[in-house]
Image (tube, rainbow, N blue to C red):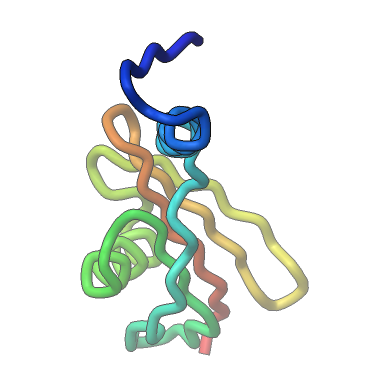
Length: 105
């Protein structure tokens, strides 16, 4: 990639190039730790959201536990002893994800 800058110093041109490259290759948003939702009959130990707020993550978690993946989402489940680790992500569009761990109460 070549950036031409007229009348600017080399350091300004270099800073502009770094800013453009940094914006294109920016790291994805970090996961937010959310309060686990209350789900009758289950003990939800942890909940993390990426790309969505905690309220929406709680709704996805409740739906995933009770009914499976919500419409437009895909979820995978792994059993770890008494706990189930569930990872859900949106299908198509922007990438949003919810990770939770729960067990029957």
